Image 1 (cartoon, rainbow, N blue to C red):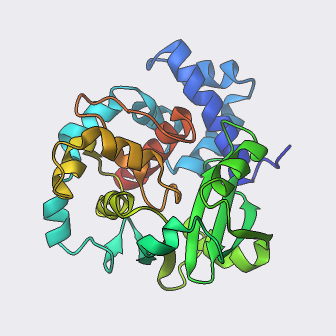
Image 2: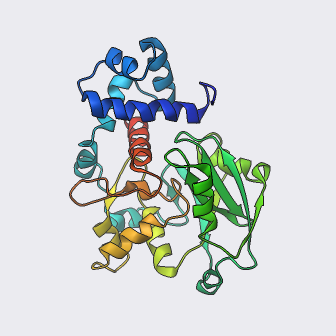
Length: 280
């Protein structure tokens, strides 16, 4: 059981709070929510405020399903405009300085043959996170809050089945701390391993600022494939570097959350966490 000051423990509390808000409704009081998850109101308030940066009552508005529609109305990002503003591969991306390069199509076709990928588990605000990286940068982040560690590991390893995987959390620790905002030590390098179409979609995702969202159809327009909305959705779902390549900021045009590879509760949590920080 994680300590109650660990990020993954905060996520566990928040995850149960999502269920409580869904069960009790948005008018639930602090006492109602605390009682539903078996905590005193004071303890619940302390944990939530530390994790989210706002009170549980304020946070409720970000957890409601209608928040996605509000984001589309108020925080919708036109990707072409974002690109013109410099939010592209070499610029400032969603509150983190990132620099990235992509594997060549030929290298990708070899399914990781000859590539050494280091991996380790880390605490994150959204539950246990599996971080992977090469000598060139972070190439994978997966979450295990809604699944098992074994399934998350199998998922990411399966992306590059011919690579050599080496457990080395100390090597990855500086990047992991920077990825989740604990430190800021210059540009955080990413190494995108995917097919050319996927990489175009992931580049478009990196133009979406923190606290904002866009739609799958807008992404399709931005990469000059306006009719490829379904293919864009598939590429979004295959994003290997969750959170840093912000696939959680892609929504359906209707305002629905759409899917999320690591579980919709994680997507809701990330969107709410970012929104709370934008509005705090």
